[in-house]
Image 1: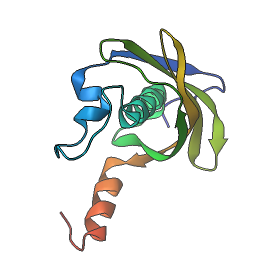
Image 2: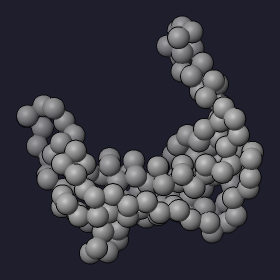
Image 3: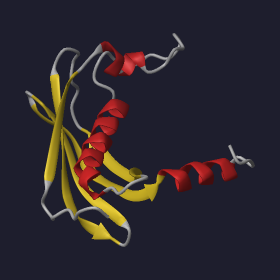
Length: 138
């Protein structure tokens, strides 16, 4: 590892909710009906990205961080055109995983929260492991 991460360290990113971030935009099938509000999947992706950016200083050459688990609740809807902010706060390590508290909010208050775990792996190991699972060496 290049550096260490101190407990309590945090990182925040913001994003304006675009059409592509809406639950209604997730499926190409017109039979699927979802609301025109910020999708849970996009909120989770932002939370993961926020924790990954907090871990950047820990990564050595050829390493990256990957999500291991996430357990969140999406508590409130956010319409398009509104800014969403996600924050990841480092809670510590458990074995080889890094544990984060993740939150999301819009101008109306908190819209989601939970826990997220990440691990550091080499890009080469991850790609070769995925290829082996598929029965080849892609």
